[in-house]
Length: 191
Ligand code: ADP
Image (cartoon, rainbow, N blue to C red; front, side):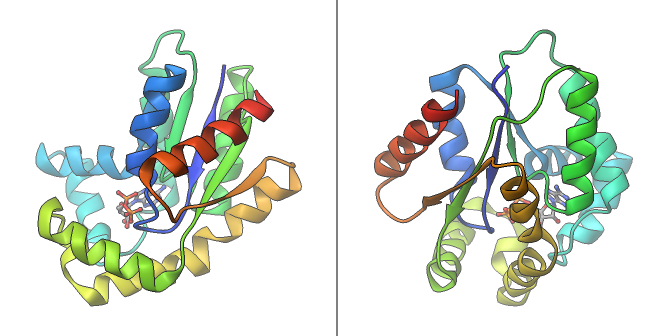
């Protein structure tokens, strides 16, 4: 299996690049944000719970997120691999993912970290708010909270994969095509 963690702050382009990668490598795209949003739309219990956190720009608690992720992975029979987009977002999630993949006799090959500076991120999220309809994109305070949470809780996940020699930083500024090709080069050198 080829399992990729696609990492980066809110607005870095994880969703856009995931679309390219799933086609190119035949992988399953697993975005925790998308799964939470689908649950909110379907008014499930999980959705109601997740919404309380997401609307404030906070992370959904680890236990809830990890259980949800596990269930999503197990829905797929003999997949070629996964792109984890928006997961892991805390060190505890990274450890849980390793244990879980280990049980399935597989693991993560590479963490691709899309690097984009903060002013550019704010601009992108502002633009996305006009089309996404996402509550958490519409309010500058919530955007700031998400960026703060990223620095405090999510950025340490980089160290986790650096220690395993799986971390690759990719310049996330350029055309969508340019960035896609940077990612292909990085993934192909590890695969
Ligand atoms: P973005 O990366 O642009 O912030 P996402 O769609 O990945 O957007 O995530 C939206 C929100 O969903 C996050 O702010 C958070 O509340 C919740 N969320 C997504 N993934 C996770 C996760 N792995 N752990 C906890 N909360 C998460």
